[in-house]
Length: 146
Image (cartoon, rainbow, N blue to C red):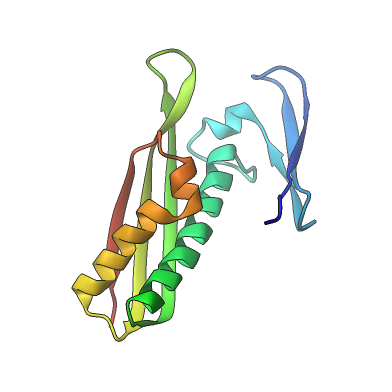
């Protein structure tokens, strides 16, 4: 299996410094990062580790859920997955991820709501990014749409 790479070039200290994170493997982009914007409500054009984790988690989860729906006899027509990743203080000092909420809405043929919910819960537990984030509370809001 492949290894994917990203790199970050950082200049300065935490509060006044900034950097750029590069999606090296795909070559699809370089994005600005800074701690003040990371910890602000408005990202103001920068990304953050939390947003990148949210992107990784939502895409991994969508892939895993589509596989599990098919295994259960359904056909996914569309899946809309959002991941909200929260940063907060760590009681031990510094910061930590305080929670992740996955929200999925799906149009699926061949599965009822209970079958979809089971596939959604199983995908939450079995997607590789969920497995990597076992130290973070992950909640799920899953529903079929007609």
